[in-house]
Image (tube, rainbow, N blue to C red; front, side, top):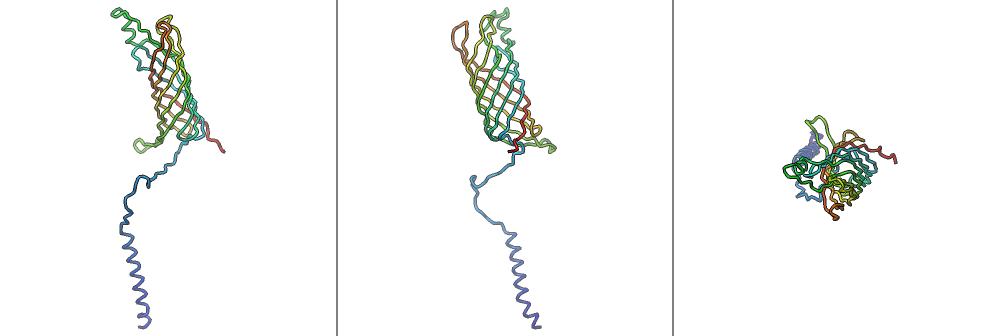
Length: 230
C-alpha cells in the first residue's frame, strides 16, 4: 500500500500535464493584425530569364491606320540581365497597302488620293521590364507559365509614299509596347505583343514634318539560349 501511495502523486501530476497540453494545443493563438509589410510570398520561377539570350520571329499586322494596312515580319533579340529587366532589339520589314477606305476615297465617288505613307522597315532598340510572372491551369490538366512585360524602344522607321513620286522617308521613332510570353517548354515560348510606334516623318511633296502612329499586333515564337553553367 505504501508503494501505491508514493506513486499516486507522480501519476496525478503526469495526467494533469498531459491534459493541459492537449487543451493548449486546441486553443487559438491570437497574434494580432498582420500588416502588408509583414507578409511576403516567395514563388519559385520555373523558367528564369536572367542571363539568357532570347531570339524570336514574329508575324504582325499594322491594322489600325484607316488609310494604310501593313502586314510585317519582326526579328527580336533580347538580352535578359535579370528575370525582370532586359535589353530589347526589334528589326522588322513589311509593306504598306492601301486600305479599303483609301480605295473608296480615290474612287469615282470622291476622286481624292490622300497623301499617306506605308510601312517598309524599322530598327528599334530599348529596354524591357517584366514585373509579372505567373502560372495558370486549364481544367487542372496542364500548368502554363507566363509573364507580362512592357517595353520602351527607340530608333527609326522607313516608310514609302502611297502616292507615286511622294518619296521614301526615314522617321525617328519612339515605340511603346506591352506583351506576354507563354512557355511551351524551358527554351521555347509563344509571344504576343501590342505595339504603338510614334514617329515624326518628313514628307517630300508638302516639304514639312508630320506626326504619325503605327499601331499593330505581333504573334511569334521565341527561343532561349541555355543557361550558363557558371
